[in-house]
Amino acid sequence: MTGSTLEAYLRSFSAAGGSQQVAIAGTIQRLANAALKLQVALAEGAVDLRPRPCQDARNPSGDAQHALDLHADELFTEAARDAGVAHFASEERPNAMVLNAGGTLGLALDPLDGSSNIETNLSIGTIFSILPALDTPEATFGQKGRAQLAAGFFIYGPQLSLALTLGQGTHIFTFSRRLGTFIEANAGIVVPARGKVFAINMSNYRHWDEAVRLFVDDCLKGSDGVLEQDFNMRWNAAMVAEAFRILRQGGIYLYPRDERRGYHNGRLRLVYEANPIALLMEQA
Image (cartoon, rainbow, N blue to C red; front, side):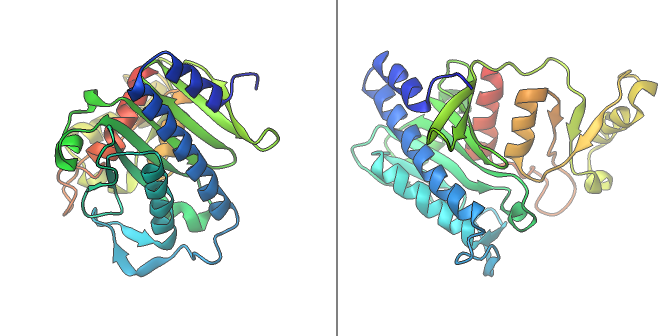
């Protein structure tokens, strides 16, 4: 890897703009520092933070809440507070809150996407979205996705990587243990126009709308069907893992609504999952 460091990239971004860009850069740097701390907890198995549900606890979205979910939330909440973020929203908290009344930014995040993968040692991540702060947290996080100033995700796997957009393309940084910092591995990455992988939870086939079933049927027919191409299927149960693969290899990820109770409107959360990933993909 011969790219610049994350610190240098953020300094360049700050120097080219005003106080808002300085605040964005500072926030991302503190998020990166928090991600490093979380990576240590994950890599060590977090023996003192056993990755089991906390007495059958559920987060506000209805997912099982593990001790590591709460630890991740604490790390990133503290990072946001230190960065001077005005408004903060997390999947692990029932309500958005004010952290710094004089701040100019809102930060929404999923502290530990795919935490059900912890015990099986599969990739998981942290997704974040940065918005301009408005009068109240509700107003800040009620803005449309196009209002985002920056977005990205950390993925904790064989490598610790950051996919980041500041509205100037999508860049991938990978943490170098040798250098002790994130190094730019891909500048201005472009999603391949055609991919060979589709990602969807096939066990829910019978619950999907007909249009989704028909599309997946076409994928399964491969070169014998209308798509005239053979595909592979992957499902990691972590949006960051699917998104990272698509950034590098192309393909498609689907998590459609279905007829099960609680799934009629889909399960991806707009503010801190769908919007930031959409911005990353748009910029790539």
